[in-house]
Image (cartoon, rainbow, N blue to C red; front, side, top):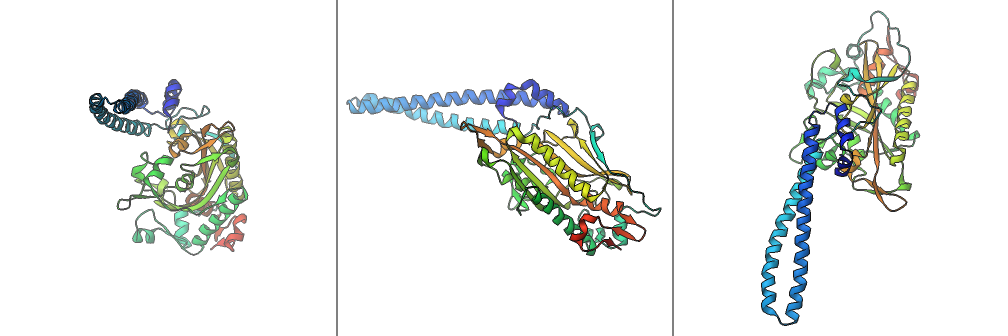
Length: 424
């Protein structure tokens, strides 16, 4: 979240940045934050003065008892009793006001990077890179949900019976393709210096708040009310929270982690071809990369993450493009995001397969993730994350783009993981 001091010192910049996002409540919430914080500071000062007066009188009482002036000492004791009551009330008021300020701050999204353009929808995103030729398919080419049924590799109806819509069952070579992609992605990430970990798939409320999923996306997360735990919507949440409440040294940077996790999102759905099959699911697999970096190096780290995802997509051999998201399409916590999309020739549309984002200090402020510089000063670290990669739409694109009349070819880079070169 944004810090009070940053908002106070950069109010105009904050409002301009939030305008890029079309955040209509910006002026109202910013004013409320500053007014509430002013009142908190005033109460805090009153509390400190009350405690100082109480301490001073306590010393006087001790002196009076030593000098035999018992009557005067007892009079002052009555005053200290009143001050204790007042200090307790003021302390509770400060705590309440601080919580109210934080609740308001939780409502304010991150400020977009200067390179981010204003815009309202995904149509306003900027294409900054593209590569690959669209494959020419045979006349009877099918979308992936038809291919999955034809070759009995993904069963959407069985998943609906077991759980509900959005929970497919992968079978045979479909399941092996999933496993092959996960292993390939993890190997690529490990080779790029990311440490592989296996995190929990459930997180507590503090973890959701720290990375910005709560309260912003509370309705999109599956929640176990009895234990007050949330199924993760992305591996970003447990991976980033590994560094919550940590004080680093400058020599600790960079910190790079990767993990495979299933992901769970409620995503109240619309209907139509754009959400059919693997296009939108409630449970899906993803390999995530998280990077904790010194503020001076976070944009170099972002460029490196983008280059890393490009290398993976180049090896998979599918046409793809990179978009720089506009303000209106930017995620709540991100200051700059690049979306990777692969082209589905059978569906004749682009499918998002990765988002790579820099959050600067927005998450770190919630995480209390700091480092000490060479002068011993405590600073907020920067956090970044990306998908490398999300599986459903990668699988959909492989099935559709690599289909031939008598089967589906496997990309060359995956054959050593699948141990077969065709689905037929």
